[in-house]
Amino acid sequence: MRLGDFEIHLLRAGGWRSDGGATFGVVPKVLWERQKPADEQNLIRTDCIGVVVRHRGRVIVCETGIGSKLSEKRARQVGVWQPEGLLVALRKLGLRPDEVDVVTSTHLHWDHAGGFTRRSPSGEVELTFPRAKHFVQQAEFDFALSPDPRSRAGYYDDDILPVADAGRLEFVSGEAEVMPGLVLRQTGGHTPGHQLVVFRAAQDLACVMTGDLVGLRPHLRVPWIPAADLDVLRSLEEKARLLREAAEHRWLLVLGHEPEQPAGYVDAAGSWSPEDTLED
Ligand SMILES: [Zn+2]
Image (cartoon, rainbow, N blue to C red; front, top):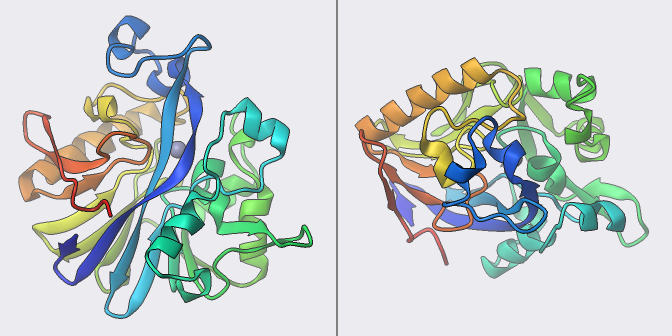
């Protein structure tokens, strides 16, 4: 779809199966399972949703999914599917990875930054997008390199360090317009440097990548917060602010993990109107 001078394509970069309890935190299962049925292991489908954006001759990728570097054992444990989804989607748009100018993600967890790097045919880890600047929050980078014990399993050095070593990381703190119309806004909450990625054509014409601030559609309810979030009160506050602004300005939201119609608009009462024209 077109949004001002942005051309936005939805990116379905595969996904995995996450524990329903972890996904909905203190919300009782009898409430969430009506909307997100769990399998016999209590797992629910979790897609990795991103976008590929063309803007004034530049190509921007936001969210890169899990990628294909996980060991077979780990990939099986978490039920990964379509780890090559990112590259397949780019190919469908007629794009090569070395044509991507800018890469960003809402945070550096393995299911968002996994596609920053990949294995070369000889088995070495290499940058997926060798020419791109990769924008990350300084606080997220710092935390990813020395996480607390509970957060350690969420980050892989192989996703991040090769990009840093190649001098392809660009650091942001707080809120910044890193290119005309591309705004990064730190929310914290889920992780210290979690951010919203905003494609802003005008005040009332914007597309916001919500990451894990609103991962699935049931998370549009402000109190429904994943158990993994480090700072729950911050998540509550930032989510309430985002939903208020999104309703007021009619921003297009793209939910970070929602399998069914992940793009749409929310109104002041919290109801959701899907927007399907980002799908190719
Ligand atoms: Zn996530």
